[in-house]
Length: 114
Image 1 (cartoon, rainbow, N blue to C red):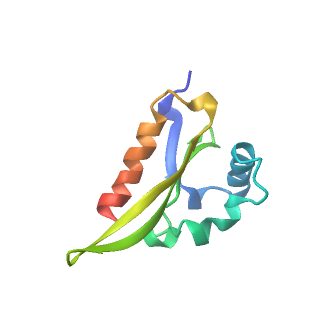
Image 2: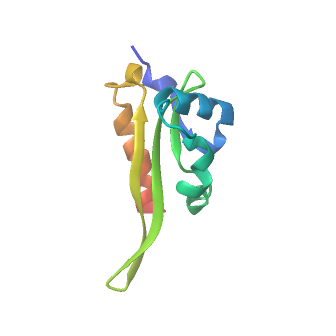
């Protein structure tokens, strides 16, 4: 049983690079490159002052991530920030505890308050 009160949702920028790399190796072992090395280019963390992408930690271990690609859009003369929600992964052991909802709500804060 996972105690959600022990889960912290924080910016991936706040996590030691080795912990992120360990997580990505575990969930993306079939890829020939490390997605971790593409963070700055692909996920544009500076768009939201280095608060994205977000990760979930449980007992100081990365157990999930929710990434987005933010952008500015203009429609009928109205400008706003938006983002594509991508690369949403929760380790199987931590699924079905509501963590996906927690991460999604945090992601939505960036979309609406960006």
